[in-house]
Amino acid sequence: MKKVFGQKSFVIAVAIIMSLCLCSAATAKEQVWRFALEEIEGGLQYALASKFKDLMAEKSGGEIKVEIYPIGQLGTIDQMTELLQNGAIQFSMISPGHLGSFIPEVQVFSINYLFPDNMQVIRSVLKGNNETFRVLGPHFEKKQLKLVALFSEGYHQWTTKRLVRSPEDFNGLKMRVMTSPILVEAYKAYGANPTPLPFSEVYSSLQLNMIEGQENPYATIQEMKFYEVTDYMITAKHRMYVISMSSNASFFNGLPGETQKMVLESVSESLDYYYSFENDFNSKRLQQIMQDKPSYKHITLTPEEIAVFQEKSKGAKDVYVEMVGPTGAEVLKAIETDIQNAK
Image (tube, rainbow, N blue to C red; front, top):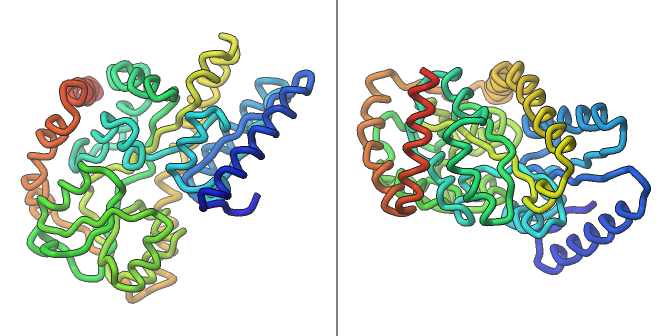
């Protein structure tokens, strides 16, 4: 399917998908589930979705076929979310930075220095079957979504046109952020000029100097060539890139119990597979970036420099609770409890 971004094309895409759903319903046993990604083919999300696809085919004896749609094939990320809510697609991966406008509570993952610098602890909190999922799940259900999984793609890296080693260096810097009020406030606290922009516009905006920086994990920076239009890449270990894997709630809840179990088992096994290579995948992408642009400056902040940013970020939790309200406080408490339990 060709890329569809305009409203008219979006309506056409919905019509096509709905007609495909009707055709699938007419078959005797085979089910076709559509899975949309917010990244391109060949990335981490694609690898995870492909493993899930294979496992579902295997466990169902070939009766369940998962079709994967990388970003752009079914519209923007917001349009993908709308398709998921309407049941036109069955699964989607969406980062909390984008989901925040639908489910304010998930903006908790946009808080800088929310997690300790310990990958085992982070993965334990995100794996599910804990307080975080118990508290977050109902907020997804209210929006006709089923929270199936949370996972990390690694730490965000700052890529900028000027060197940043302290909050003062951020002063006035036009930093692209996702449409998350928490991210906007986080960069205001550093003195930056946060600029919400669609993901598809980041490269050209950096190229035209409309923005001066952005943040993403190594893999995304390499895939989208953001290093070509920036001069520095800074590791501050400020925020994990957390992704949600969600299903349409009516679809998932309407599945037979055995099929629901099959889905959750496949997700768990897919995540085990994913985490077995995620770190190596990001390391190779970092190597590729430095090979493609040897002049690129990769800076890792010292513990002392990171401590200054942590101090500046302390008020972020209060801002989150103030913005979201009592439900936000409940989600934050659940995550903090799971972090302590994981430690």
